[in-house]
Image (tube, rainbow, N blue to C red; front, side, top):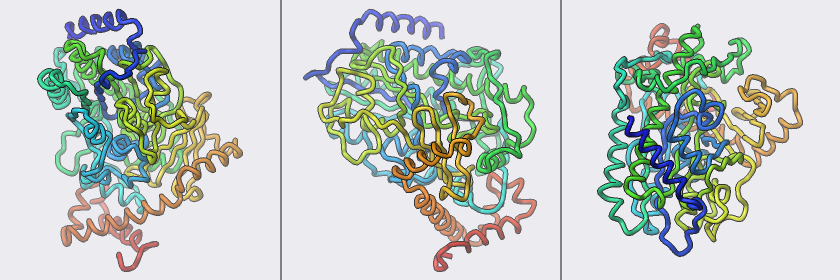
Length: 536
């Protein structure tokens, strides 16, 4: 890794020696190459102060210094498949009906990469994609479909840590490193010879928690796993222990989430600090893979001809709000990194506008000079990051002063909708009446500990009206509710007489098997309520 650091210094010097490189006009010259690296579960707040003080992220810092950082970038759905579906389609979740980790885009869906290929770009993808339907475990699907059932069931594994004591172990997440190697080899053997511009996508699984040691459908995916090498990149003294509301004072959806994630029991301060330290160490390993890509582009003399983008599908709560994973609209879960550098991109620019992952689709087309479709939910980011690198066909307005995020999957017992504006975050649930909303002033309450929806009724009402003008969320919630029941019935019928055994052995098996008849009855009652009799 010493060589990696020496190379970073060399690349940094190169960037400094290229005055005006960030303001070069494309003109009639060949369109730039594009490399997009997307990790999983990376808290976007780590890419700017003060979050960056807790862990060394040299290549993220390099991109910040030599490109544009979007300080308020958000996922459009805080879970893997729906989030990635929004990024690849440029459309909000409710428009593609990417409701959960099983229901994403059709495999033949036309993505921004397909469009760029049709316009002359060479294209390649490596690593985690996860935006089409049919993925993830049966547990994950059934938990999403049955979230409205009147029961509380824990997944079997609460969050834990696992350490590799070998101080020289660098490649902990071997699959991610292998995919990074494949991407670099493609650059060296294929892309370097192209006369046409190329677009390369690398998807990383880190810093997503690892599956726990148990196997099959019972795994909890709850292990934060790293080595002493990466823990050495973490400043343990800078780790913040998050404040928690008492269980009795938690918002009902938060309580459900915490309970189903098996986080309502006691955690010591040491346990919480370890989970957070291991998570930050996994972020450091992710940064190193991003660095390998940047260094390879430099070594191949492609860096000055290539726009590099880095983002993530969502964040990681890492024990904030008494939760881990994502599936929440809190900052740790919904705030994502978004960094861009390369020809035409402003250097050392921090953009405070709220943006989201649906903006990547129009940005990609704008980079390539391709006219933007009128039906997209997102907006090109180029007008916010460059004064000279613009598409003649771009939409006139730069970006609305809000973003929308929505969630319909497991570990939350109501469809959730977030409207993020300048310093306000408004969160509505279900039909907008049966579950109380939340309102946070992020300028004075960045930890989101005080719901001020009742204190500021005029603001709450105004933001709710704005949200309803963007999405008819009570109608969407009703559609998801109906979809969940229909899908559960199809699944139940597909396994026939084996149903009782299968459902009793999903991730909630430790709770379920104590009173199986009780929980099956609860599901039967749920199916009979507000359901088409013919479907039942």
